[in-house]
Image (cartoon, rainbow, N blue to C red; front, side, top):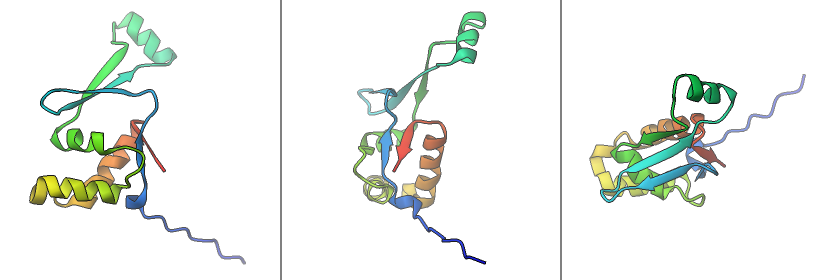
Length: 115
């Protein structure tokens, strides 16, 4: 019986990049708002029948608004974490557990790609 190859991949070494076509804006106070277009047949029906908006606006909280501009497709999550730690200090702890969860959520909502 052959043994399966176990590939261990460190999630924190992944490089996040903004999802192509996802708009965002940064206000004067630094808060970030993502602009997600509601596409697809079900969304179109909801827009017509229930008057749902064509674009949903997602307002990021303090940590998210700091992290979003750091996502450039070049830095991995560890490098982003160093900048978060330098800016927020103890307030960011437990840092890498929070970042891993945060990036998993961003990926599940299709806001970022992780390479």
